[in-house]
Amino acid sequence: MTVACDLVCNIRLRHVRLRTLKLKNMALLLRTVARQGLCSSRSQFGILYRHAVPMGTSAKEEMNKFWTKNTRLNRPVSPHISIYQWSVPMLLSISHRGTGVGLSSGISAFALAALVLPESYPYYLDLIHSMSFGPQFLAFSKFALAFPVAFHTFNGVRHLIWDVGKGFKIPEVYRSGYVVIALTVLASIGLAAM
Image (cartoon, rainbow, N blue to C red; front, side):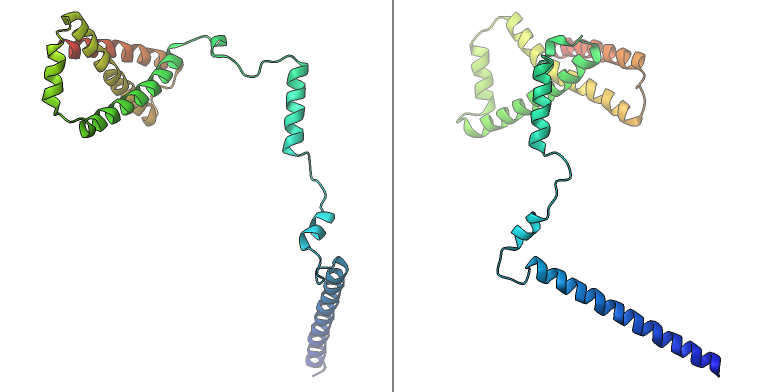
């Protein structure tokens, strides 16, 4: 019986201690709030900023340090494209992006022209034929239209192969680049000859 009484007394004592601790914490919190003036009519943001401590340098200070250091070391603002040694993968990457932008712009312009211009497509095709350009000009124009389509297609297939995870070794990258260039030229000549 005494063990049970001791257990009940310990539980009650623990409960009283927790309650006292909670009350002390609440009193401490209330005292802190009253000291800080959160209950007063002053701006709450001023209180928060008054006790704020900078944890590091600001972005503006970092930027100023960066530019001061670069000026002192006489560094250029940014590397110019002329300092790079051009390589086949670099050229093909830039060309792939350029042909993508060019093709999407051309298709959009053609679609917009089809909507806006008053005549139909055969009329404008006959108009081009009536201008009697020489066969060399027409062949060059066809080649100029076929080249971006062929290049973007073949280089897109190359990128799809890369997406599978193949062809990442440097010799394979160069070899696939040369294959893309050769196939592009051959396909463009073939399409222009039609």
